[in-house]
Image (tube, rainbow, N blue to C red; front, side, top):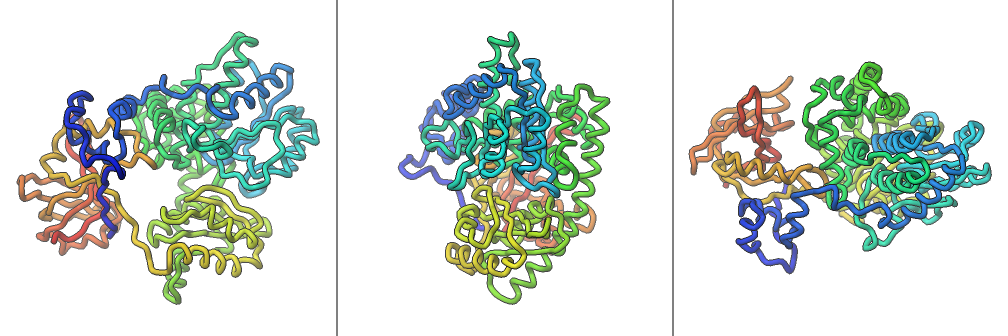
Length: 578
């Protein structure tokens, strides 16, 4: 069970919003209170948030670094130099590389591209492939979603006569690459940025928007940048960027493009995922249906497969590639289950011997493309900063995930003497170290985490909006209003409410092995009974819960099936009713 924390308005804000605002904004008082507690303390800010209009995006020329980098790229392209775009092998990097190629193609410009192989090349740039691009006539090297840590490879590119532009969004280290232009919001003062947390594809979107405008007077052509928004939405959601300010608008519009699936590769991917090509997708469906399949290419295959899918011009050529990605994803899930079971046994063994604030787990033959997913699942269960390592090309490579109370990137910086390299964000990072340093790194990382968090186990917290009775949760007008808050994700969580005490009328197992359960719950005050689903709670909500009173933390949603609309209740947590 989690700690239930009810939202309160930010310090210095009145306890409630002015009651007249609800009528002025044409929303219910309850939705107004939800937004007020989330820090929306101005009527115009609420209106802008709910509208999420594309014409409120900041133009590319008003972003720091973008005009200079774009002008350089346009100048070199117009001089006849061939560009190569180098993207990371994850969804963010692949969508960013695709976006660059789409824009250049609209101007009649051919470009080279490279997505590194995770196992043979690893993350980021490498000298050997930079040299190979030079041999193919590359005169401009543009990185997307990578490059900010690749000093040696960028130096080599310059020695070979390339013009180098690094576009990235990862935290920079002290030693920056000697590129001709750097485009990374993390290098700019926070107050100079319209949005501090762009994904790599978000940075590429604004950069290429400026390149598009600079090229247009010379080529007589112009790419419609809104056609890239499906890519921007996928990359932003995949990289778990906060869905605030510009990101919210980009993803909101991008989901509409994903629903239309005008890009043949997306239509094929939806069909290969078991959906209709024109199915409307939520941010969650993109994250759990499309993103894993694109990621599967870079995790256990080759990321170039996913890029080729997104670049296909017709559905018939895209579908076989989408089916390959679906098969790779099935293979990935099987390997993930096996690695997760082994990592979980190792974690339980370590915790049985001593109290630990962190977990550093190692498996000789674990797949480097899957350890990050497993790290997320271990953190979900044990709620400790976790790094999972495997052997890779003579050294140990791993992925880390953290809890919200601990800055993983800062923690790794404090243990960097034990590492060959690291990079990432506050909640996720990648590391590489020599095998003989595993013990010293494990001890050093534990010392840093325990100093910050202590060794007593932390409990995850669940943020709730307010108490919501079943008669309110059954109000379809209110549930339609809640949909106005979408897309949901980091920085804009789907609302979770606390129920009043509920009587459990019935419990039914869901899925194979009874891992999930379905409950029929009665709000005794109103008499209303709703059916609720509790995923992965079969062991906690045992059959003897029937007839007892509990409170649930839940999300109510409208669900339409065969033309009939009902209320779907998703249980996030529960506790006995006092």
